[in-house]
Amino acid sequence: MIRIGLISDTHGLLRPEALAYLRGSDHILHAGDIGDAVILREIAAVAPLTVVRGNNDTDAWARKVREVEVVSIDGVSIYLLHDLSLLDVDPIACGHRVVVTGHSHKPLIEERSGVLYVNPGSAGPRRFTLPISVGELLIDRGSVRARLKTLDAVAASKRNKK
Image (cartoon, rainbow, N blue to C red; front, side, top):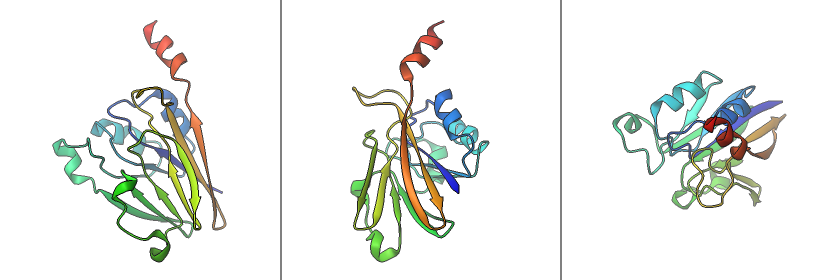
């Protein structure tokens, strides 16, 4: 089984709990709004990393990051972009089994017409009352499933105040 860690919307904050969750991944996908190139280096130290630029990634370092990436892992094609509303391809026609996005900060797993849509939510600063979360794809002989994990940001903030 192959484990692909999913993270998005770090906005310059890489929580230790998010990094711990990503450990053990065979590959990691970051769906944009990274916030700082240092975050990419820290995540890439855990596993091979594929990343896309989000609408808030406007600094010079981010210009080198593409807005869309396609990766094929164990025969499963994954289309990675930041904002689902900007999806400009037909995933079915293109043979993509999974579309991974970020942007909304709302964790989501939804299958439509055989395509799995996954948004790991936001792993960075809390927005409104939305959870702090990450996710994973598990690929086994061409079969793929997704899981989301809500991080305990309350405990983390208490620990940081000590």
